[in-house]
Amino acid sequence: MGLDRNTKIFILGALLLSLFLAIFISPFASPFPTGLERVAEDQGFLEKGEEWSAWKLAPIPDYAMPGLGEGALATGVAGLVGTLAVFAIGYAIALFIKPKSKS
Amino acid sequence: MHIPDGFLDPKTIITTAVISAGALGYGIKKVNQKLGERQVPLLGLTAAFIFAAQMLNFPVVGGTSGHFLGGVLAAVLLGPWAACLIMAVVLIVQSIGFADGGLTALGANIFNMGVVGGHTILLRLCSRKEMRAPYPPRLSFICCHSFLAFHSSGFCIRCLSTCCIGYLPSTCSSSSHGWRAYAHWHWGGDYSHCCGEHRPGNQTGSSQHLLCSSKCH
Image 1: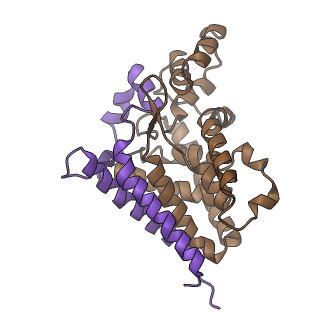
Image 2: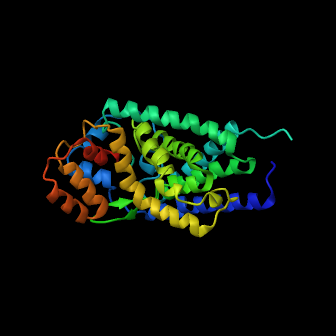
Image 3: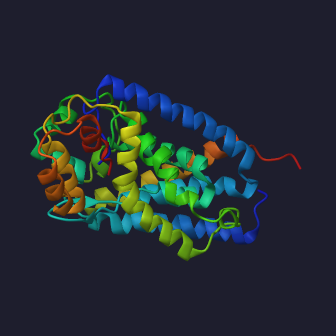
């Protein structure tokens, strides 16, 4: 890796911050519906989004790790997996677009 | 909540998918040209942070919640085209992995949060010099613009973009209530009341219904 020490520390620190937010803070997120959800519910078209779905195989539906119930643990683990997955995929795509220079 | 499957009509799905795909294609080209080697990990890092931050819903008003979007944060850090890519990564993982946002609505979600979110007009007002500064940019700069973006991208910018594109969701409420309800839950009533009184049901329609469906967090 052609990254200097400070950059590596910054990346590690920011990743740890993201993981902290996703694992330990997300269980305390507001359970209220979002604007769209609330409007859809009030106007009676929320079912339209629920009765038909193009993709039913999501491994972690609704940010709750299957098998861990609905509580803080399920949310925290979902956050951990999701954050690492997004980091890995984002990094991989960036490397694919911008391969390391040969120097 | 991002836009799920079943909310948008085929016209909307196709239009937004084509625009988003075009933006991503151009984004890849731009990122290849502009991104420095040491910014490569930052792309993944920004995406990971945005994913984490999007999980943190906070109460807004009258029993609803909202969350950070991230498009502008990404644009401030890495430029608007990289922001499109970052938001696409986040949204694709959310849609396929977490059932948040429909697969058919992915184009619309990327358009709202990545393309529009990353290209907010506000961003154009920042000084060029600051845009080119090595990362991390000044914290105050990021905080200020992320805050502005939260307010603007949630409503004004989306209104603008949706009016321009003029897509019309078929399944959204066909009365003016959809629009009013949307404004109500987004802004806490005042705006919707004023809007409802001054425009008693004879709106031009499309842009307003649109807005209702283009709400994405």
